[in-house]
Length: 232
Image 1 (cartoon, helix red, strand yellow):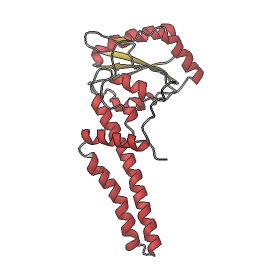
Image 2 (tube, rainbow, N blue to C red; image 1 turned 90 degrees about the vertical axis):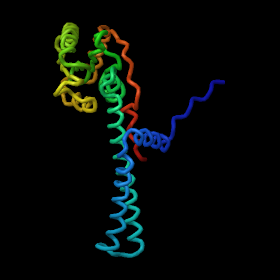
Image 3 (cartoon, helix red, strand yellow; image 1 turned 30 degrees about the horizontal axis):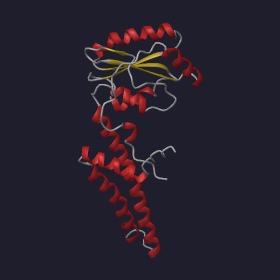
Image 4 (cartoon, rainbow, N blue to C red; image 1 turned 120 degrees about the vertical axis):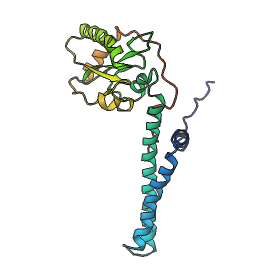
């Protein structure tokens, strides 16, 4: 008899884990969460007692509204702080771009956690994402060092799919480079020119060119899993 698969942790367990990881890495997270919770609660108590006097029922309803608003704000702020902490932990590490591409994008994108080109000596790498905007080549490392890698990969892609737009992004220490946390946002800014079926066709065509590297995803909090679970 096959063993029953382990159940995924419940929402409260997930929330507690996210809180604990964030609290350890972000010393201001706890005071901030307390403030955003107590603020609405204080308003819910003060308003009916001063500006909007009413009966006991009115006071109770205002307090409940303040508590619910406070809980909602706590979840939002915790999610944002946890995500920021996760990106901070892996930013600058080799393979960080692959972690974001593999876990942080919607299914409309065809990506991989492994680079399509890599410099074994410097560990600079180029990743590829295929979406409705076409092909995006993302350099991880110094802009000057990764230029040749990008140019070589652009030529490979152009030969395979000459009519598809090719875009470039740099994630690294250079001034003006895209920050790791802004990578998803920058990818979605490109003009959409392909349909879903065309995205899959392009991705399949390029798969034959792909030579996966051996850069692992950096250790630390996963940005895709750092968000606090949404309340039902």
